[in-house]
Length: 103
Image (cartoon, rainbow, N blue to C red; front, side, top):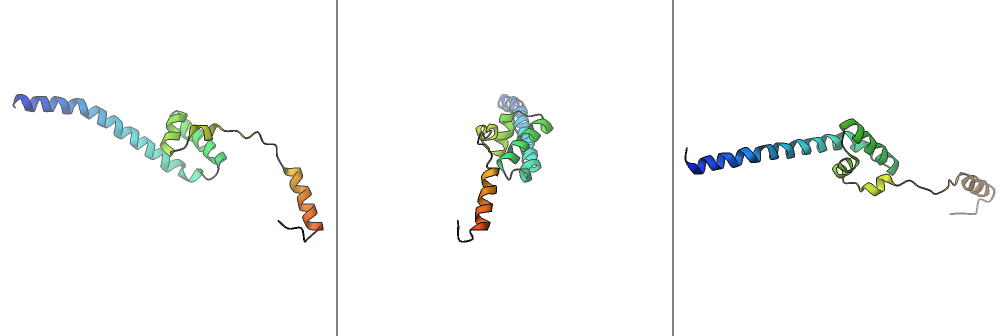
């Protein structure tokens, strides 16, 4: 074994753990994606899926969001808009009384 071969071997020994770590992280991200991809239809479902991924796989919110390509601010958003159930009831009543009132 020449000196250049020994240097190359040493460089490969240093590089190998780094590559193994990267591979393990990618495999974890793929597992998260496969597990929660069907649970991401609505924003509320995405919030639930993020919590599930964080708890099930033991990863941070940032890692769970990055794995799915979702911005963290959209996951943390909580609507402060009041419900419009009463208005919907009144609109339905008016629409049933006055059939010509359209959209």
